[in-house]
Length: 451
Image (cartoon, rainbow, N blue to C red; front, top):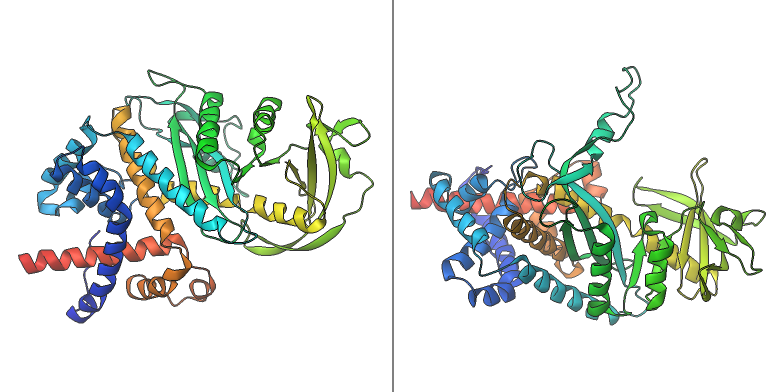
């Protein structure tokens, strides 16, 4: 919604800041816009730039990607149909494809890797994870397949004092599947590398194994051995481990406790048996990103191998939680581990995997990715990649050199006096809210002055 300025002074004080962040957005998009200008009509290129700004301004989880809503932000509420038609013409144009945005984000990711390589002792991480986009009310859109609903799982959770849910079986709804790759360091802000959507039905059907292999080859060509691949337990399998070891990819994989490995004496046993009768070699307080608190964790590590790849030495790091009833982390890696310090560095690397979970949550809730209502697959992929481009721009605002501007932005566009907001590190949600407020304020001022 449009934000009404309190007075003319407030609007004037916000103008220089709006100009700065508008310039940042144009600078971020300009290499891509120059390339698109060679393919498209100038009006469509202008629509592309305006659409990115409109996505930032329109904050709605349920209607954030409705073309009719974006059209009113692209031009004005009085000219919403014309704005909607311009966006439709952009998405329907056969002269460009989602691959153009994917390639641009890949170039940005390469630049990010080159910059972090200049930082000594910085560990470059490529975080992998999977999610789904649920479209529970849709049945006609092209490419929809059955996905397990996390929303239904939350709603079916038993609440004290209420009746048990009618079923404990997983609920499946229409949707599309999603794989995300995120770059980050141990202490640096993340950078989007790739979002890949796929389906298991219809004309564009594929499989998870094919998508994983495609992304692994893409990452090898783009980053080589410069990054450490970080995976959750969903990737733990003999076949996937073999693919990583075949090309000597650096990896850190959370290994299920029931899966077997071979110890130094050649005995085959479950991962949970490696720590039986062994005391931790070190312990420390570790910041828990999920619970936002310090937890005491201890670790031990041991050499091992897999029975199918006996000539490839591995290390199993066992990180125990200080909380009763919580299962330890079993982290399998081919990185060199000679002491506890190196083991702790890999534990911290796996803890950073929460960044990719946050990226899924942010793009779904804050950028409204699940609200997309386009029928055709190619058009939907173009719009989703534009949203991914906007997300990459928002992540670029987390750079340390911009902190003074961000503090001013939060002060003028999203001022909060609560103790929690004062003590919490700057969240991406408040940055987007502040940008939306200032952009809408400027746009409303321009409309009023022209009227």
